[in-house]
Image (cartoon, rainbow, N blue to C red; front, top):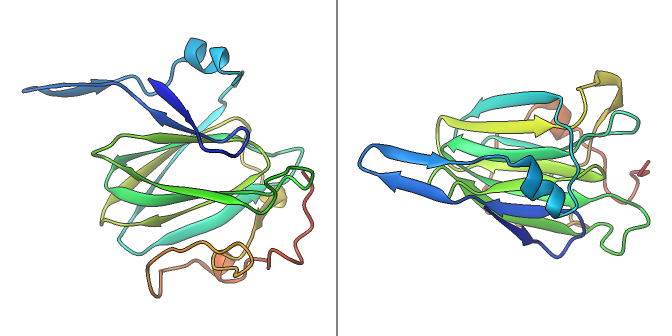
Length: 180
């Protein structure tokens, strides 16, 4: 397993070693010792999974303290363009984002720490997306930044994504007040 620095503190792309043969494949999707040796002392308390079709955009979501969540995300089947936006107000990379494709073929993962808004655009039908979370879901602390906010500048490269009501009504980044 290789942890790749994204250039934004705390945000990692994880590339597992995949052992493939005529039977299929095997990979290690989490290793506490490896994560800890890279300064990631995490305790996961909740796993989530979603199914989405091509063109579904979920995000940019986060939970405010004290229910903020770190997330280890990956695609089981299908593909997504996965994005994390730094919303830590005292961070030198505040407002910056990192995005990459997570696919069933590359089997990459991303660790998104507390203090980031997260979203993804589904690139294939029947995409199954998995999240390991460091805190429990709390409806009263959830929040959303507008997915296509010009001041962030994410290039989703998809016209007219399918959005939830919450995502349609996300907050503009410039008026959003970070609690991180």
